[in-house]
Length: 360
DNA sequence: AAAGCGGGGTC
DNA sequence: GACCCAGCTTT
Image (cartoon, rainbow, N blue to C red; front, side, top):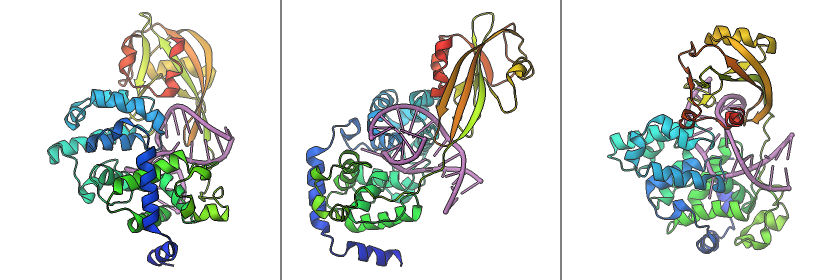
């Protein structure tokens, strides 16, 4: 069946007007006070939406406040060093978000005189702005009736409209976008979109939704069928592969520690770390040789001090941590260098390596 | 369409 | 452990 026909089938007998009213009324009364809801500044809305991707509100709040203090305007963010931006993002994860955001903001300053564009095509062409974020900015900052379909929205609508499509597929997201275009309030698209998300976060939760307190319970087909726990349908992903490493906390005679910048692409791009040897290729007895050939450093003393397991979305690092004292003072590798304990604080580190700081 | 990309909270 | 989170980009 074509999407248009499905939409007509789905919304048949659905009281859109009443649903809108109940949802918006509830949102206006019950919405949380959040820093990015102080006003409609498109820059603030944008930053908040990027930070909120795959990230809980409670986690984002302190990062958002700090980020706005350090980079209050698009110009301030455009002029900053990427390392400063990554430092402000440190611990938040998905660091390409930060790099894409700055890239896009620089584009806005260069091409749009620092004004966030309110045209869907211009906005969507900016780095890091996909279908969801585009719709969120357009509806929340510019009051345009555009769909902003995230995980919350798909869960809420899957239940309300009793839709059993796999929400992991992007064709399903497109179906929901069409449904929203049909259903969204033209008078207050911002409260409508945010209301769906707020409802998903506070009431229509993934497990044990509190249907008894739901403002749109009477509209919910899954509730009436007793299917709210079965929806939404989502294909589960396969589990992560384990990768073993040795991490070396190397101190020279000055008491400085060896750190190294990761490549500009891929996992944790451009962040800093302590040197890591892949344990699949290097054995513990080979570490002296590895340190010599890789960094030109002679080991004086080496001690096993910790074991760290760090879970990413797609892999698991299993890290054996060793402290090392060396004779050399300089590292041969250009992206590696010795720094003092104090200097460490300006470099952005992934959480996996922050866990090793206690061994310094 | 599937995989890569973080980190934290919950059950 | 598994799942989820105000997803996007690359392959």
